Image 1 (cartoon, rainbow, N blue to C red):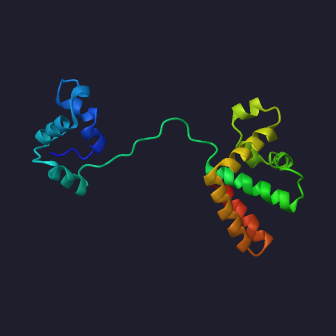
Image 2: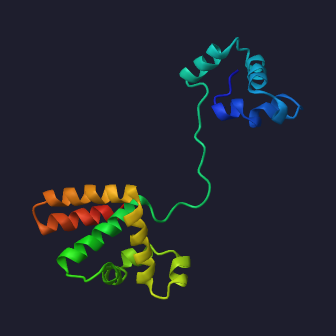
Image 3: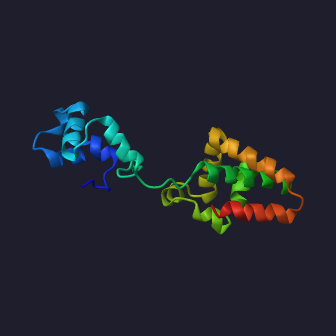
Length: 171
């Protein structure tokens, strides 16, 4: 009977192999591990193993990323760049720091500050400005910013732009 909870990493990796033998798997080659799998499941060769994958009897699981989820993604940094840009052009801010001081007053941007950033910077707007500076140097953030800016240029009314920002803030 085939165990349908097996993944490719389990088959080739050490987890499943340890069930088959007392031998230390760190010294076994991939060929030896596969031979053990063939024997255990009555497979003739790699084609039989591939057939199990094609019939979804064995799955391939992805490797999970370690660590905490990133608070500042490229999309969020692009949104920050966009809002700073709009404030610079529409509200007449003299520089990015002034725009960040205005933005940090909103609950939305205040909630994006990590406790360590807020503790390090006496002024929360400095933490926001730091993220804006990082965003300007991040290629992916700049590309997303340019896409948003291009799309906003196609919108007809101020309400359309506001609705677009509301939509962006939900992600």
